[in-house]
Length: 440
Image (cartoon, rainbow, N blue to C red):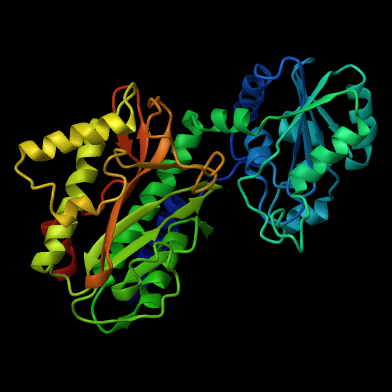
C-alpha cells in the first residue's frame, strides 16, 4: 500500500510538472510566421529606407531585437529592409555555446531555416553588406533610445559624458554615411509593440495565472512575527515552481514606515501585529512580464482604518475595470468612476479618496509586455483613446506616511474588442475574501 501511494504521488508530480513547465519551440518561442508578420508590418512604416536593430552584447536580449526575430544569441544585428521588403540577420555562434545556453543548435547549423529570416550572414560581414545597402538607400533607421537604461553610461554627468550604445551607433552611421539621413525608429517600433498579438497575449496570460497563484500563497502564509524576506522568497519560489524561470522585477514589499517608498525591496522589516502590507510583483514567462499588487493586514483582519483606505482604493479599481473598452480615454474613465462612486454614496472628499494616485487618470499607468514598463517604458497618456490589444497596468494606490499606512490594488489588463480582460484572475480582492483566505 505504501509503495502504491509513492507511485501515485510520483505520477501526480510528473503530471503537474507537464502542466506547469513552459513548452518551448526548438528555435523560437513563436512560429516563424509570427515574427515574419511583425517585420512585414514594420516594413510598411519604413518603405523609404532600411532599419538597423542591434541585439544586446551580453545579458538579456534587447526587447526590440527579440520582438522581430525571437533569438537570444548575443552580439547579433538585424536589418529590416523596407525598400526590398526583406530582412537580413547577422551573428556568429557555435553549437557548443548554444547548447550551453539552452538554445537550439540549429541556430548555428541552419540559421535561415531556424529563424525564417530571408538572409543570414556571419557578423563579420555586417559592414560590407551595410555599405552595399547604403548605396541604394537614402535613409537608415535605427533606435536612438533603449527601454533598458544603461546605468554605467551617463550623458548628463559632466565627469562622464559617454554616449549610450544607441547614440554612439547613430554617431558612427552619420560619420560613415554623410550623404544619408539617419532617423530614429524607436517610437515606430514601440507603437507597434503596444498592440499585442494573440500569441503574445497568451504568454502574458500564462504569467498572469502564475502570478495570481503566487500572490494567493503570500496572503495565505502571511502572519505576524515573520520577516518580509520570508514572503518575498515564497512569492519567487511559487512562481518558479509553477514554471517561470525569472521574475519580471524584484518583488516589492512595503510596510509601516516604508510605504512612501513605492519600490521598496529590502525585505528587512520584522512584521508585527497591526502591520498592513503592499506586495507588488510579477513573474516573467518566456520573456513576457506580469505586474500585480495586493494589499492586506498581516494579522488577517482589517482594522477600521485599514478597511476605509482599502475599500476606497478597491472601489476605484473596480470602477475602472468595469469601464475599460475601446474608444474611451483614461480621463473619461476617471470622471465616470467619480460619478459612479458619488451615486453609491461615497464621500470623495475624505483622504481615503483624495490621496489616491491615478484616480483621475482612470487607473491607467504603463504598458506591460516584454518589459514590465513596456514599449519604451513611459506611462500611457491618459488622454489616449484605448484600442483592442493594449495591455497595461491598472494601478491605484495611496500612502499615508503619518499613519505608517499604504494601499495598492493593481491588475494587468487587456483591452478586448468589447471591454477588458483581467490577465491575472482569481486573486481575492474583497475584504471578506481576504480575511477568509488568511484565517482559514
